[in-house]
Each structure stands twice: as structure tokens, then as C-alpha cells.
Amino acid sequence: MYSGPGVKTSPDFPIPDTMKAWVLGNPGELKLAQKPVPVPKRAEVLVRIDAVAICATDLEIIDHGPPASILGGMPFNKNFTPGHEYMGTVVALGPGVDEYRIGQRITVEIHAGCGQCKRCREGMYTACHNYGLNYGDVDKGHRANGFTTDGGFCEYQVNNINTVIAIPDSMSDEEATLVVTAGTAMYGLTELGGLVAGESVVVTGPGPIGLLGVAVAKAMGANPVILTGTRDNRLKIGQELGADYVVNVRDEDAVEAVRRLNGGKGVDYVVECSGAPNAVNDAVRMVNRGGKVCLAAFPHRETPVDVAHIVRNNIYLYGIRGEGKSATHRAEAFMTQKRFDATKIHTHTFALDDLPTAIRYAKDRVDDAIKVVVKAKGIAAHRVAAE
Ligand SMILES: [Zn+2]
Ligand SMILES: [Zn+2]
Image 1 (cartoon, rainbow, N blue to C red):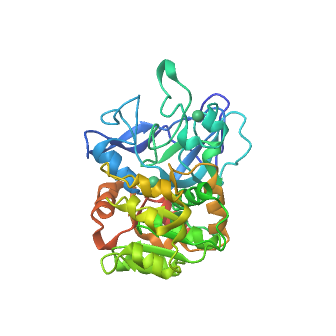
Image 2 (image 1 turned 90 degrees about the vertical axis):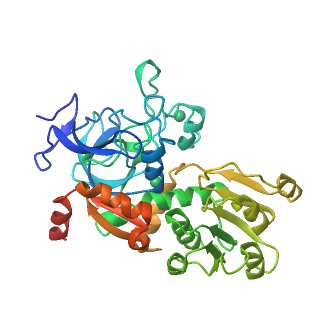
Image 3 (image 1 turned 45 degrees about the vertical axis):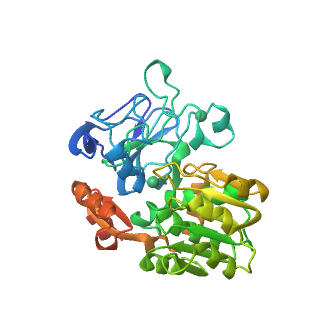
């Protein structure tokens, strides 16, 4: 029977001893396996995973390894379960946990951090100095589920309570998986200055973070919000999420278009979500003097950057990793208040058993897929029946 020292469970939510879990074998190879259901320790809960979204970073990890780091190295053939954008129901409480209750619907953010290093103490837990040190005699207790510890392509996972966010019943499972994506966009805007009401923002790249970046910037009162990209269907979704202007960079020069749309001087902030080869040079020419650029994409190659232009114009560049400073809670608050409809970027849902198909849809953008969500079988049917 499932149990652990000091762990609280409830007969309303029976927990099996083992669960279905996808594990990463060689690069690109996922296998469905049985694993023991993990047991929460102090300050942790056990989450029954009801839905998990696929992220471009998952595809990167499955095919290439980084930014995942398991036992101090590549994640292949280590019985590692990827997946990090999940939501579910709290079904067991670790010793002393009273912040959440069994049966509560929640979503999660990724990085728990070690909680004791300089950056964790500042709320910058995505830049934890003990990143990935959670094994053997260097165990600092760091967790980033789906990156340095097991993630969400399975039926249950443990989460530090610092990575858990309560959600209302009015929020669907699918929408709840998008909170962490909106939280990443929110963290970028927080680091740029936080209060963007009345300030001008460009978002480059209409991927999930870019599209929700538009939504969050607009919800925070930014004006205007300009979205640039290459796909008209995605730019249209950006407009529905709050972009005042969209620019298809295939049709016109993005820097010229931004300057024209904002009175010639350039904008206050750029949130760079495209990872395109010339993205940084374009971004620093889209901002006005003293403007700030948030770099939220992982480009594949090193690219030359016009440093002289950046220095001459006192432009600030911020590398932003993930969702620090509890930005996810602020994003969830916007979503609960229906300040924007994140579900506009959710396009497909598959059963957990169909993960390889779901991944193919996400990777090849089959049928214009943007966010593809996977749900544990039965639970999906149950929830629909219950609503
Ligand atoms: Zn992600
Ligand atoms: Zn830390």
C-alpha cells in the first residue's frame, strides 16, 4: 500500500504503488514504463497529473539533452521522465504540509531551487547556484521537474509547495497547463521594469511565450503592444490576445515597421521570443535610447551582436530563464480574472498513451498546432462528466 513517513493520504483519492511513466532512452526515444509512485517529503505534495502541455524545451531535451541535467550530465538512459508544464490534483501531503489540501486542483511552476543560495534568497530560483545538484553526496535538494528531476509525462509527481499554485474550478485543465508559460512571459516583464502601463512593448516571435507575452503586456496596460513574426495565423491569434499592431517580417522590415508604428523613436521594451539569427541586433534597434530588451529564446548558434550600438544608446539586455520571483502566481491571477484567454494557443489534446503522436504534432506543427496537451486517460472523461 502507498505510504511514507508522515505522509497524509485520503480514501477519496486512492494512490497505486506504481504508475505509467514515459522515460527517455537514447536521444529522441521515449518508452512507456512502470515506475513507483513517488512519495512527498517535507514541504512537498504528491500531484495526480491531470494534464500536461508539451513545450519546445521538452522537444529540445528529448532530442538533444540540454537544458536538462540528470545526475550531473545528459538525461539519456537514466530512467528520466521529461515534461514540465503540468497541472493536476493534490492527492498526498508530505510531513507538516498544511498549505494545500487533498483534492485541491493546482498547477505548477518548474523551478523549486535549493532555497538556500544567494539567488534563491533573492527570488531568482531559476538561476539557482545549486542547479541540478540533487544527487549523491552533493545533494542540495534542487528540483526543476522535467529538467533536473522527474517531470510530468506520467501519472503522479512530487512538487515542492513553492512550485504549486491553487487554481479555481472555473479554469479548465488545459488552461491551467498554460499558467507557467504566461508566468515566464510575466517574469520577463517583471525583470524589465514591472510597471509597463502606458509604455510601448514589442514582442518578437509568436510562439507560446511570445503570444502570452503579448497578452500579459496588454493586461499590464502596455500601449502599444506590437507583435512581429512570420506566420499570419499566429499573428492573428496575437491580435486576439491584445496586440495593437502585428508586423509580418516577410512583408516589411521589422525595425522600420516598429519605428513607424511608434512615432519614430522606437519602443521602451522588446521581449525577444524568436531566437532568430539577427534577433538581438533587430531588438536593440527597435528600442529607444535607454530601452530594455528581454531575451527569452534559446538560439541554436552564437551570433555577432553590435555592442557599440548598445553602449552608445545605453540599452539594457536581460537574459531571462524561466519563471522566477513567483511570476507564475501573478500570471495565474490575470488568467483567473479572465484578463486574457490563454486557451487561444491550445490547439490539440491527446491521451497520455499517445504522447509520441502528441510530440509529433507539436514538433512538426501538424494542423497548425501551437500548444498540444496530453491528458491521463479516464481522468479526462471523468472531468468532462463532472462538469
Ligand atoms: Zn516550457
Ligand atoms: Zn538555490
